[in-house]
Image (tube, rainbow, N blue to C red; front, side, top):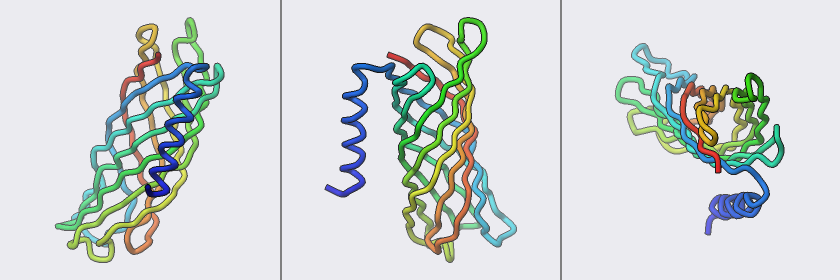
Amino acid sequence: MPMRARIAAALVLWLACAAAQAQVYVGANGGLTHWNVDWNATNEDRQGFGYRVYAGFDFHRAFGAEVFYLNLGKTTAGAGELKGYGYGLAGVYNLKFGANQASRMIVRLGLTSNKVTGNAASGNFAGTKDSLRPLLGIGIGQDVAKNVMLRADLDLTSVRTADSQLGGVQMLSAGVTFRF
């Protein structure tokens, strides 16, 4: 079994054990991505659609942890195309406020293992590159029912292309979280 699969399995097992004592949640967000990759072309399209699927738990009123899968969408220039995705682990800070503390600011800081693939028309970007990169997420949430929260997030991470160029990727998304 590959090392990444072992780490992912250990994290899932750890989350399952901790779930007995904590508030567990799952959710999904979708939205716009923007890639900061230098194509050196005039017909670039750096916008795309991405999504994030996550599961986590709050082990304290304000602190928690989250595992996630992140689809970073794609960027193109002519026939060249880069696609990216990743998975990772983040610490979560929830600052609750408002009437009955139904609103919250959410800050996530963690690591994501990103993979970027460029097609043959991508020139120097052709090929696949894995990289372990930091992730910063900032969002707001609003409880709409006892165990349902609507949220909007801004996720910031970076990727390495096949020629080892470092580029940033941002995703502005909205979604829903279900608590158990």
